[in-house]
Image 1: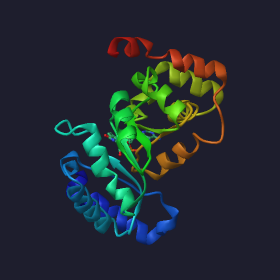
Image 2: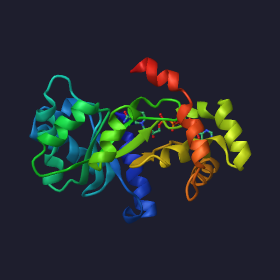
Image 3: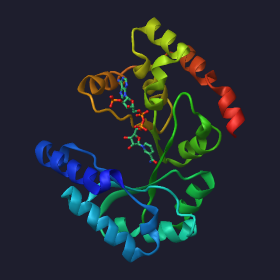
Image 4: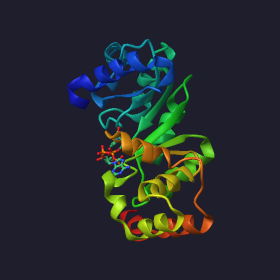
Length: 225
Ligand SMILES: NC(=O)c1ccc[n+]([C@@H]2O[C@H](COP(=O)([O-])OP(=O)(O)OC[C@H]3O[C@@H](n4cnc5c(N)ncnc54)[C@H](OP(=O)(O)O)[C@@H]3O)[C@@H](O)[C@H]2O)c1
């Protein structure tokens, strides 16, 4: 889907330069390929070919396919693990009930990740999905964790950042890292932003600042759920 398949080819070129062993490679399957095990395997092999690898570290179902039952698509998708095309499998954009069904449906492979929208300004998953993931050992990959850069202009985040000598981006990401089983996956195309993002690790926000950030956008959580 990304750049008409060229994104995977581009990652493949990067892997050749930096070395396969240095990168945790994740890719996703589109819902239209989930209709049968054969279709899953055909699409997955095409992804691996574009990436130039024999297996990826993590393969995700991009979105649940509403034309199939969750059980059907999870079982068809499990083939990528059983055939050795992925070290781990997971899902993306699955709500709590879909995630539970998918976990129960797989026979031999474990679903280890749910990649979902989660940021300090959008905490809708904290109601039920995150507590379940923590209890069940599922990793939450938080996508759009910087709200596409919007967190930088938030007054509360800026105030905390100024007080502790970090940047708003670092405060935002550290809040997500402080949640059990949560890994934010920010995107950037700039080296200086990569460096700033790296500065969000190896320290912890105080309990008080975490508390303040937990209160942020509570109205949104209540309204949306
Ligand atoms: N599974 C799904 O359905 C799904 C959906 C959406 C996204 N995702 C994944 O989640 C990842 C991130 O999400 P996203 O791209 O939607 O949003 P995001 O990471 O919240 O925001 C990305 C934006 O933030 C900017 N940014 C990054 N670091 C910055 C910094 N230090 N200072 C200022 N601006 C900064 C980037 O600009 P620069 O490039 O200029 O730094 C970019 O415009 C993506 O790589 C994508 O793969 C998954």
